[in-house]
Length: 474
Image (cartoon, rainbow, N blue to C red; front, side, top):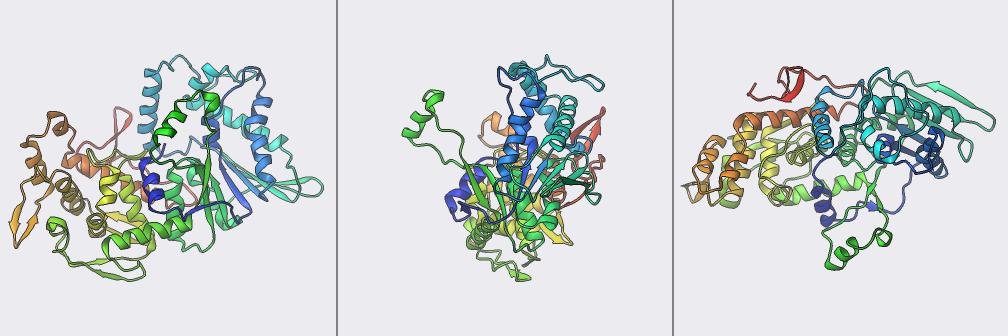
């Protein structure tokens, strides 16, 4: 999953300087959980060995021809944050609606002698218990049977624990990396290997990895190179391209990949944010803010203080991540009726507003929900629905009120009942902001699991033994 797919398109349209043709590193990290989820079973494939050889071992060998170290990583469901169950339930419901509810596999069940037929395989991959058994089988086979195409190379297999295998001229040695603490999701695990192996290419199509890697680079002031290999970002197709997409399968192009240089992507982000707001670089500790500037004077709706503290480029990157996640992710809902383009086109207001409502200290990102709701969020909805929000005139500048006032105007306006129904509440906004704050701090944990209290602190609660988004303000 990940965040809204329109974000990479906007960044790509901004600049292509961060897309590179080659990498300068000796280590690749494979998000093998993604490889499993997009795997398929051939008609004549009747043994686990042939399936594992084709799907995992052959690609690992191909990477080992170019990289000295290959790290293969899977999800460990015992340690995946419990908050993820909301997204998992949504996916399961979608699978059931699509007719994928006939497959059952529970703890203690025995795996078949070979992979299921493709029609059942798709359903089986929605079952966590089955996947845990399969991953255990896959990792055991890889560790026991894999032989690299050349020696003096290293393989790391990360599932429940982390096993390092070094292939020497003769034989190999195997070591359990005791310092690697239990971690759940595979897409956050690459960070703990950078200190061990240095510059790295992360092979993952999960868009979250872009933000996680950017946050890592900023947080650690990492001067080396971090790359992400992902599906190529495609802009809106032309008429000719649409005809190509409508062509028979045999005529379509295969999926293309691109390599993102995360350090350069980060530079593009920061430059764009600074250009949009005339803010100095993040090395400056205090940024003056003219609250009377801006379209319709909406900046006057921000907090009363006249300066913003910018602690580091890590704060800027956390701010950008915050903005991206306002459009939704696996752990939070999106702001209703506010799109990616609206946020990006309004950076001149969005960035100062985020500065007003956030802080960053000791690698902890904090969001003041009240200031965010009555500043950033109120401004976004006032700008989006300018025809329906009655703004008071003061000194020649239009001043929007609190979010409660904005919502009152919108609900009494001529907007359709569907639009009014979709509008957020103060409680739902508080929940979303707490969710996002938790996600960004979760992504800062480089070796270990996050704390997941279910008391509403981070916008998650336990109701009838199920995790749900908090329904009332905490």
